[in-house]
Length: 312
Image 1 (tube, rainbow, N blue to C red):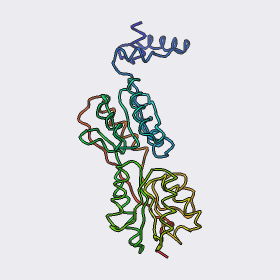
Image 2 (image 1 turned 180 degrees about the horizontal axis):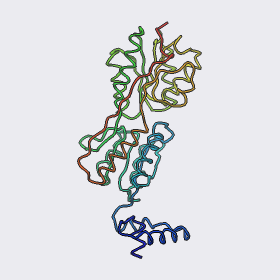
Image 3 (image 1 turned 135 degrees about the horizontal axis):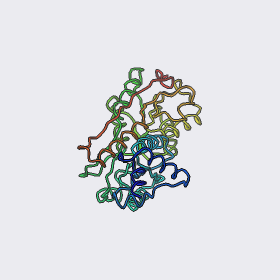
Image 4 (image 1 turned 135 degrees about the vertical axis):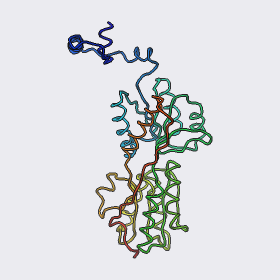
């Protein structure tokens, strides 16, 4: 038994002959170690939770892919939960991951101001890393985030140089991203019209309908998020407005609705998969007690395209 244990734990003090015999028996029997039993001895389950607010969001899906690959290489398994946009389900998912005794949690919850969510984060005793979210006030939680403000500021500056002065923005969703995106546009246009609401396709549609119905109509529209962009593009299509000719348009993220749209959409871009990788690395550092973890800030950038042109 001790020889088998040494082989399966990759202990160096095993002869080549013994290793070959044990691995041959493993293959013949289809044996795999009992992770629960190993966890009782090591006080580790070698599993990490990823609590996502809404995994149908392409950005969160890409983030989870990046995290899973990095964790797998480090010997950890990933348990994924989806709250479907419901903050109370975020709370339930965090509690469930705790009962499963995961070693740590990567958290991308939906509402940073929700009382029950923040109370949960203040009480949880599992190592956490936030993915592009604000921690509750007075609570220190390591995080990986994006510099949304700089990318959105570059987009607004591009619109200003094209001659736009009546600019409107649709914003919503996770508070950190919404706040930074809004600030980036207001760095350039302090009189920008802004509608804030749910981070959904439906709100993006309703807000765009309202904004393009105003007189005078904004000459440029900024959608501060990929789901908001989806809804806004649908509203512009229904109004028979041509991007770049009738109204200029800026969206966020490299998602399918942007990739296949004609004319090509100007985007504030980022690398969600890198956020997953860096978040996993940060959590592994915490679990291995390898120094004091430092927050990570990843870049965003603006890519101009034909959806932005001088105002009509």
